[in-house]
Image (tube, rainbow, N blue to C red; front, side, top):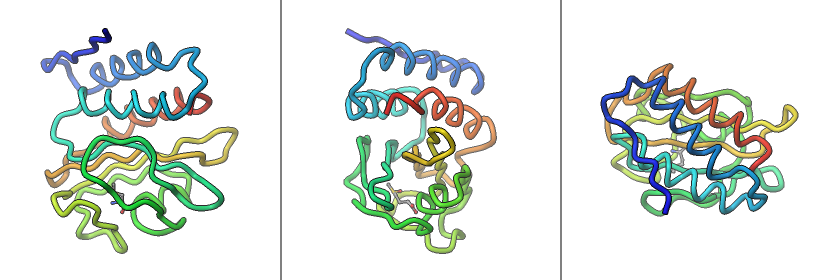
Length: 160
Ligand code: SME
């Protein structure tokens, strides 16, 4: 049994350090990227409050394709440059969106989503996937969240 229950009293940076350590323990030595993404999606869901979607889109033949996630069923394919995920993938940069309704081209997979954080996973400078977090709260994500998920993306670069 894996028991990685987070301590709710921890400040965000420490909570993310524990999340990354748990992801490291779960994925170390496991070459199957689907298994690793599935376990990390479950960890994101357990560690981070106020989410309605947490998971991965993978870069497949020049577009993003849905990967393992927790949440409601989502759009399957996202062209580069479209929506928050496609923007993160095409620019290779984190997108921290406090109000998705103010983001031109935002793709609404779940009408409950109000804010979103998307972090690209880069391997040797190339985007291979994005990590996508959605929240039903406006302005749920800040720079501590972005830094924490970017650390997770660096860990996963050659594991997914
Ligand atoms: N909202 C995203 C689409 C993916 S879902 O949130 C799961 C976007 O605009 O790219």
